[in-house]
Amino acid sequence: MEEDKVIKRKKLFRMIYRVISYTFIVLLMITASFFIMYVVVNKVAERKGENPPFGLYTIISPSMTPNINVYDVVFVKKINPKDLKVNDVITFYSTNAYFGGTPVTHRIVEILDVPDIGTMYRVKGDANESADEEKVYPNNVLGKVMFKIPQLGRVQFFLASKKGWLFAILIPASIILIYDIVKLIKLISLRNKLIHYGADNL
Figure 1 (cartoon, one colour):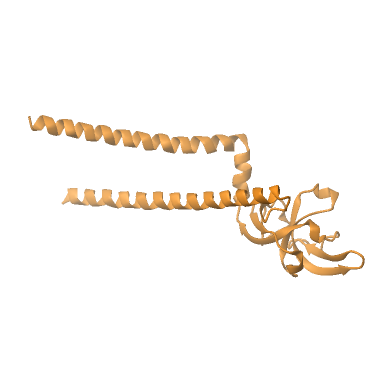
Figure 2 (cartoon, one colour):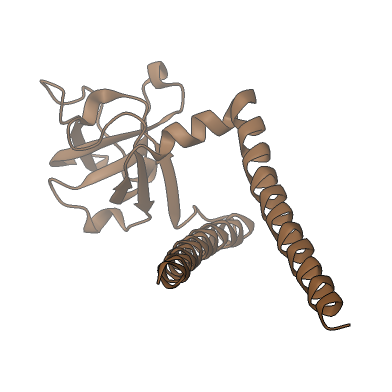
């Protein structure tokens, strides 16, 4: 009776292990496929001399809190500036020297028709009290924010550090090593059983 319970527990643990393993592998494959597609599509656009149709940008300022927080990563899709509307969140290159060419992500609060220039956008950070002084030119718009990946930027910054690189190498290596050790132990155990079985039948 006790042996049956042990066997059932082992079967349950194996099933849980397989479910977790397959789930992890599927998620890994989906993530890898997404990033491969992202890189390929953007590289093709670069070769054609066009702006990439997609972009991933890490937020480093709290100006869009609480809707978009520091270390969130926003997925930006290239869009025709004519299709932009008030309340859309956009990522753009600022003409303000303070930002040093760093992409900025703010919300459109007003669409302006400026004489001799054309359409421009007044933008504002959700956490800011007032709109930005500078207006955004359509040519400087990288795209519209489609969704955010919370706190993914922390992983990005961590992996960019020396400790992060070491961690990224050691963890997969440790998993592979543990897997090989477990497999070796099973093979040794199976060999011993076969030897014992053969000795008993002599």
